[in-house]
Image (cartoon, protein in one colour):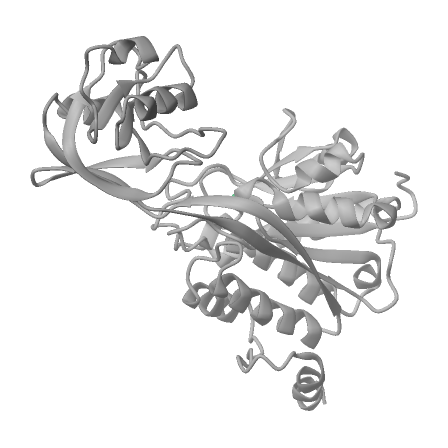
Length: 390
Ligand SMILES: [Zn+2]
């Protein structure tokens, strides 16, 4: 009966996008399908394909879905470098850098690259190589531009890569490099500075699923669906997105489904954009919330499942589950805007994965996702029982 009904529901509820999202046979199917679309960067076609697929699964389970769009500015480094001879040296475009390619001689600028350091120096049409420190990145770039430089490389004075923001739009291409790369950029070296950037307005879309008629949920289960450029985002955070879908699947025919919102946030990787937009747009309907559960990176066993957040919720978690409890207020993910709005939150996380934000983030252990769902359901049952007041 159900099998006969589903295609009919889908035909009614799916927008005419021609993608024809198929019905899932379960988590394995979900993971394979969504990962086949590629990195789900906010605003990308792959992100939208993933959303359409998951939207279809929620609807097939009898949920209504709603899309909430929001926009924000974003600067992307599409892959920048400096080439000297046959050496290709990696660097990162500073945020608000101009894009472009400059082939010219390098000039090592003494000091920290302030205006006084350019007196008697010929950088006209050349690439100024300056050290980090003392003055702002923007001040260094402005001093180089005034002296006539065609591009700027800023060399880290500390360990590691140099990433940062100029704060304001620069007219020159500006690359940040590690001190190792900086050491290779000697004075008078012919080089090509290649800064590939894209800037524009991104439209993010949150997807919310709920049973018909529910406006003030008692529980909200959420996770971000977007991933960073170049990373498949299997653990970060298809794992959390699928945990949300799996809870929806497991409770579809129980009273819990009629008391819960299921949210897949967009733009988390660009600074919690989706969850912030959601909290702002839905403030009145969050008043009843007894808990917001956020699932982020729950599919790779970097650590055992760790729960952090509201003291009452972590107390319940300790009583009804074997998950570890992290007493420090966790940050950095979509529960934060809810916690700031006064909603009790619980963050489900398995620690940083070695493939975090890398092309290798393609591994996902679905048993860990199922275990996370089991834990979430036992805590939810306790939190929503009449005996537990908010
Ligand atoms: Zn994440």
